Image (spheres, helix red, strand yellow):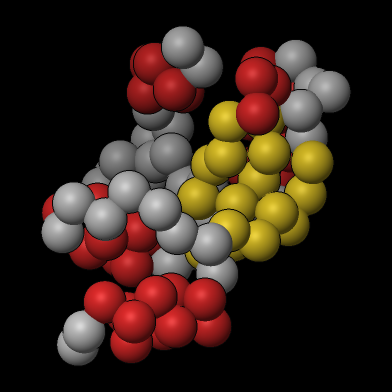
Amino acid sequence: MNAKGLKQFIKTVPIPTVLAKHDRHFVIDHHHLARALSDSAIRDAFAEVVADLSGLSDGKFWDAVIERRWAHPYDEHGILQANDLKAWQR
């Protein structure tokens, strides 16, 4: 695919995000596409903000994201990985 075709494709598939503090976007779907773009050194993509949770504290943010099933911070045994959540808050 040439650069123009790639740009047009990326426009048609915006990456759903949730807005957190400090204007940080957290990908809640299309993470394989986001990873493929990143691995291809493509640094710009189109995002669709599904929810603005930037006014919430870190704990409330993660409670809201997990409650809505936008994140699944559990290991292969179904155990919540709280340490991973703390790392994401940085």
